[in-house]
Amino acid sequence: MEERILLNCINDGKPYYLPLGAQISTVAPESVTDPKTGKKYPVLAALVDHQLVDLNYPMFYPHQVEFIGYNHPEGRRTYLRSLSFLAQRAARTLYPEKIFKINHSLPSGLYCKFRGEHVADEDIMALREEMRRLVELKLPFKQVKMLSADAEALFVRQNQPLKAGLQHSLGNYFCTVGCLDGVVDNFYGPLVPDTGFLKVFDLMPFHHGFCIQYPSDEDITRCIPRQKQKKLTVTLKEYGHWCKATGVVSVGALNRRLMDGGAIELINLCEARQERGFADLADKISAQKDHVKIVFLAGPSSSGKTSSSLRLAQQLKIVEMNPKVIELDNYFVSRERTPRDSEGNYDFEALEAMDLELLGNQLNTLLAGGEVELPRYDFKQGRPFFEGKMMHLEDNDILVMEGIHALDPAMVPSVDQSRIFRIYASALTSLKLDENCCISTTDNRLLRRMVRDNRVRGISPEETLLRWPSVRRGENGYIFPFQENADAQFNTALLYELPLLRYYAEPLLRRIQPSSPAFAEAVRLLKFLSFIVPLQPSEIDAIPPTSILREFVGGQTL
Image (cartoon, rainbow, N blue to C red; front, side, top):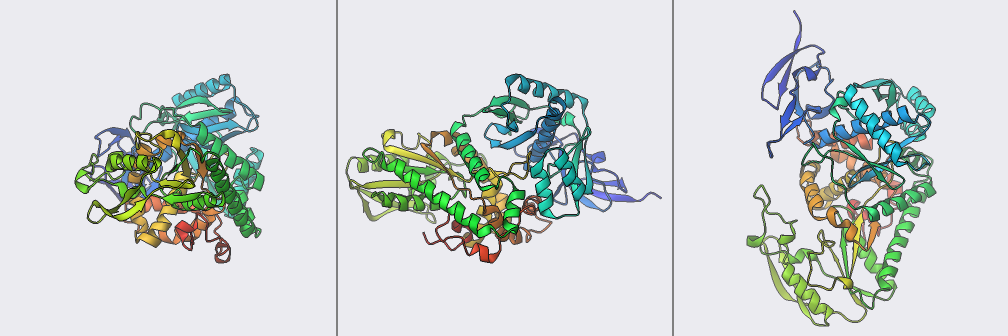
């Protein structure tokens, strides 16, 4: 009698009995329905006992499965990994002598180029058509295990030194690689079943290369819209040059630096560079001090805005300016006036949640030489109070204010915009796993937030992971659309921070139980951190107390 394995499907609530070793694709529906929007999405992958797997996953034990589409974060990542592999395959077919690279993510997609070359428009068109041809062929993606030494040698032959270096630094005996139409590569996670799933994409010229656009979250039949990103690109490019100058352009190179005992030297170098960056910002503001009287600083969650404003304030004092801080959080409207989101919850991140009239009037009064009484917002009672805290501006005084809406011109439209200097701060890492896999700046910030929230706010790692999608929606709605409005962009990323965050985040992630809906995300982050050599306690002690990273791991003296 044939042995069968029980599979409980979350999507339809039904039990299925599969033959031993059968793939879960045998019971996968064609699509899943988003419970919030009612939209249908093609199935791309699955969560088996909350762990992400591809649809070829074999059944040997009873499991619980949830099939997922592009509406799920893990579904989107699976699509992007597969699309990146498709682009790699097309590039090798058309230009076997060139080295295809994915440099970093952008608001409009993935920025790609050929090593050391400018990509012509006709080459981009040819790549697009080749990718579409491969999609029509519905070529299967496969995952196979091989000896790490063999994989390292293969990547060397393929002129992929970063991939080879990463494999060497990990010291594993086996590794898993992906295969597509005879091409072997590694994209570090499940892939869609075949290229036919990747119908929605586009390529557009960008800088010296091109940008791979992928489906929009709102409408998977269309690519994400093109966005202005010149200033962001310049910031990433500058940081990329810095990585090259230090010899740390990839995780493999970073691991080697740490294993060779170079951690403390790297920490000192990174902190010195960042201090110089704050000094440069202060010089730019000081050069306009006859007119500029307000500094607005904005950035996404856990970008280090608070520490950045304090570090900037120190540098402003050095150039003989007197910074005064106004906390934008004190300008919320009373709770009964707070707008609600589509689910009926208070939307504290909406611009309308702030008392814009009061803020604008007080700023204009200060700029005119008058005095104002600053509000203090009581979050427990949900209303502002006035307790006699007065403020006015002397000749050398300058206001420093940080908040998520600080780059939105609609925040203070009545204020003379020429008197405001706007700064966008974010942890924009250019560090890469290898030639084709860039590190997500979003993951960087998520790890920062998880460590800080657990240490300071008593929020569990599970809660942080489950809240993160809501945080991301707020950033996409209220921060990222305005980042190009900044007069200056400041990168708070530090080359040594992922080894630091691994030391603190890994034990927190391991506490999340397999039954938790956050388990899949915890497993993904643990796998990512497993590629990185952690700092040792003696090396962590060398991080200065004024470092931005001390805001997250503790020990800050600002």
